[in-house]
Length: 212
Image (cartoon, rainbow, N blue to C red; front, top):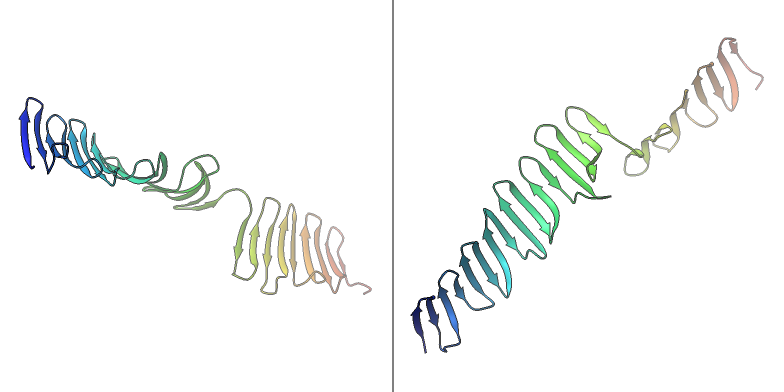
């Protein structure tokens, strides 16, 4: 039997059976069944679907999705994408993409300063008025081979055949077309080698020519 009852506790609406409450209007108002319903009370509004709270509105925050798993929350501070309690992205005046935590990589977009790629909160690369790459080895690859490599000890450039044509080490610069043909510049001067033979030395004592 369909009916409605009014008591000091509020208004209840039943459908088909006295145990089948489809709506309650009171301090806490409920519309729907136990698994699919809308709940309104002085703390906010909750929409439940298939026994999971999928939309919650409270204290100026709107949460869309199961808050125990992947969901989005929105407020005047911005929008946050979470997996449970883990923040995966935050959109506000500045934007963070990725988890911020120990050994976690993320992208931080500063509205004023530019884009930063970070390990936790430590910058690995920064793109703003200037570009800064920090730590480790930086490699430019043409899709086939490394062409320019910056490491903590050297700078190396390679041609399309893979030959190391430029090496900058501590106090030494080497220009080469092969391991047998090269020019080495260091604090002592210049040394020119051709076909693995030293052809010229320019320094405190200069020599041009060789036996080979």
